Image (tube, rainbow, N blue to C red; front, side, top):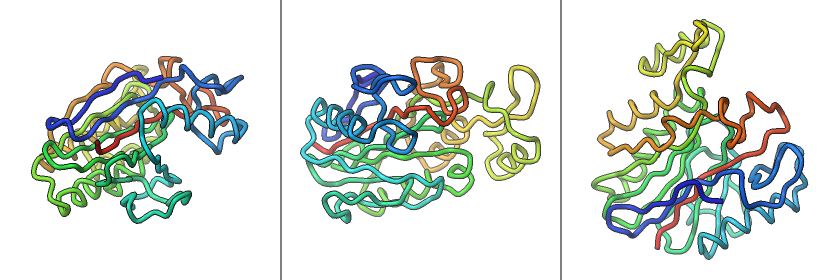
Length: 241
């Protein structure tokens, strides 16, 4: 169920990245699918989400409708049961978990090293260009985070994430570190490299957990590019203790 778990420097924030194991979904979504918009049975997906929340011991789990934008939302501003439209979700409330879901895009966990602040970010090509990662970092700094840590999870790598040349060049024009070439010599982007560049430029301490875990290459991950519309979603969760 959890591919990797960890905590902030102070131990005040815990986080985990899920894999595909330990859930109840069947077929192409087998088994721990956390996505509700890809054809899987909604009741089954909600059971999977509850399994993650219970295993991680959160009192409340807030998720978001991700739209490849740059909006950042605080869980404290979300009414119970509501699902905000955003691509970064932050929390300063003990026991309230925040969840991001992906299938090729880059999942990011942010924690304040010493303060009780946690966040998750969904970053794809558009989110990278629109600056969702710097926006989330800025929000955490506004709440008093002196030192921010980031953990980056599995995603489509720069050797596989092929794009039309004009599109890849447009990303590279905004975030040069993201411009890449596939292993077969065509234009590509490396979202993870772009995310790392943005985090580093903003003084964030980065741990790249997913550097060797390309979602397109490895079927232990859900991948929209490999599986199509029937792809499930894995994710990352963070919670202030």
